[in-house]
Picture: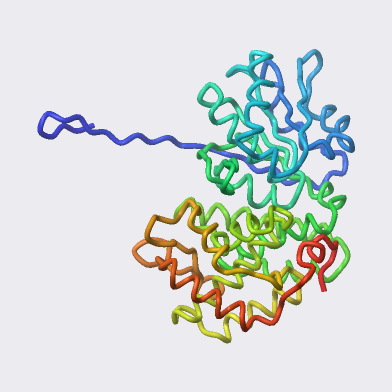
Length: 380
């Protein structure tokens, strides 16, 4: 602490520690290592689909003899991760007098993790948070940077805090039972993180997508992506958002009928194309990455009736943007994120809209049945 001109100045710091458990046991044996026996009561917030399938196995590995527990079942849909649903979870905790000697456990994918993490960070200024991540996007994205979020009525992820889980439990075997369409969302995020770091997971992602489920390959993808995510987080909490400014707007554009990973991969193609136009990236490098996306069967399509001006209006609500400029996360190649004075490229709204008009006119990968196409388990 220092004094200057009779003012008092100080710097507040806090060190957070999170542990990520990766478990191959079909019986979830390492779930017992989460340390939940040290808390008075356990408050589970579960994806209703996960609860239906895994409730008994999860409780058997987490709840100690005579330990009180409560469960709130939640639909895994965007409305659940909203300011309108937030009071439901607050009431669940408040009515049972949840406190600092209790633990809250989020059980589900990205939507449940975002909802619970945000709520727990604001309830009594923070309760002990644990996560059992049951989708690939949950294991590699929603749990790894301390970013919590809720949707407002007009924008995706507008409300948020930074709050860190004590332990994240990741089961590889749970991922085996996920629909391929859901796993594709996590693979899309993993692909993006690998582009931002060393590219080492890209071939694993292609191999996984083009063969039957392989636990060894999936574990490597999970482990590498968590490490990549943590490395990017240390640069800037928002420096991982390659393709997200375009992608979040695409989600909103579709009325959230398009899932997050599918949207951000399309947004990544847009970001790379814009980078080529601005001289930040070579065309052949973009095409090399694009070919890997296609080989892996990740989403590269946009709606046939795409309206650039609508997308830009949604992009104005991006949390990285100012009233005058968009701030875009960009890459110059695999493992070569753009770094100016900040991790973001400043772009004029009008310039991006003009770019999108040209992009839409010339881009060959369009679908008239866009939302229906992306509902498929596997893409062409």
